[in-house]
Image (cartoon, rainbow, N blue to C red; front, side):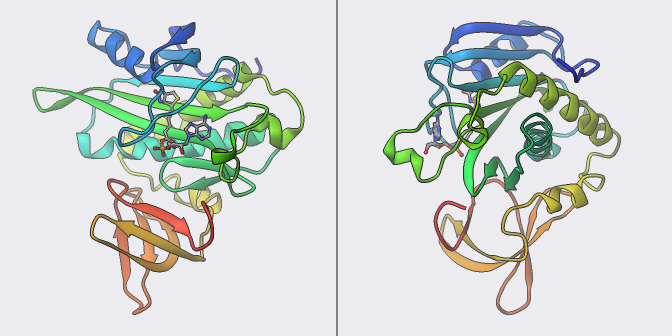
Length: 256
Ligand code: BT5
C-alpha cells in the first residue's frame, strides 16, 4: 500500500463477517478502544444505512469500514465528519481508480451520477460531551446489482472494468481523512475544505429538489458553507441553509 496515514487505522481490525462494522466500533468504543481504530468486515449481516435502512454487504462485494474517533469538540460539529469522509472518499477513489467521483451532499459519493458510496456517522455521548464518533463508510465494488438498485447504484469494479483492491482504497481513504481531520480539529469548521468540496459537488449551480418533513421545494444548489450546510437559492432569490439532519436533496431527474 502506497499511502499511509500516521495514526488513522491503528489498530486495524479486520474480520470475515460482522453484524455491522459501525456496531462493532461502538462496542469497542465502550471497551476503551482508541481514537483512530478502524474496523473492516468482508461481509455484514446487519449493515445499516441511515434512518433504519439496510446496507447490503455480501461477501467479497465492497469495502465496509468504520472509523472510531474521540474528538475533543462539541457534538454540534460531529455531522461535519460525514462531509470530510465524503471528500476523503472522492479523493481516494480518484487516486486509486483514476475515475471522477462527485459528492451527493451530505453522505453519498457518485460516479457517472450513480451511488457508489454511502456514509453513516453515529455518536455516543457521556456527561454532555462526545465520548466517541463512529464514521462508517460502504464503498461498492461488486460485479452487478439487483434490478431494483441497478438504476441508481454502481461500483468501482463496474466503472473501471477490472478488479479494484479494497485495501488500497481503505489506505488512501484513511490517508486523506487524517489530513482533513487534523485541519478540522484546529478550527471546527469546514472553511479549509469549501472550495475543494464544492468543486466535487454534484448538481452545483443546477436546480435541485429539497424534500423536507412537511413539504418540498426546488432551488439552485450553490455549494456548502463552512458549517457544512448546503446553500440553496430559492426562486425568490433568498438563500436557505440546509442542515443535513432531515432532508433529502435530489436533482430533478432520477437519483442524482
Ligand atoms: C447510506 O445510507 O448510504 C449509509 C451506508 C453506510 C454503510 C456503511 S458500511 C460500513 C458501516 N457499517 C454499517 O452498518 N453501515 C456503514 P442511506 O443513504 O440510507 O442509503 C441506504 C440505501 O442504499 C438503501 O435503502 C438502498 O436503497 C441502497 N443500498 C443498500 N445497500 C446497497 C448496496 N449494496 N448497493 C447499492 N445500494 C444499496
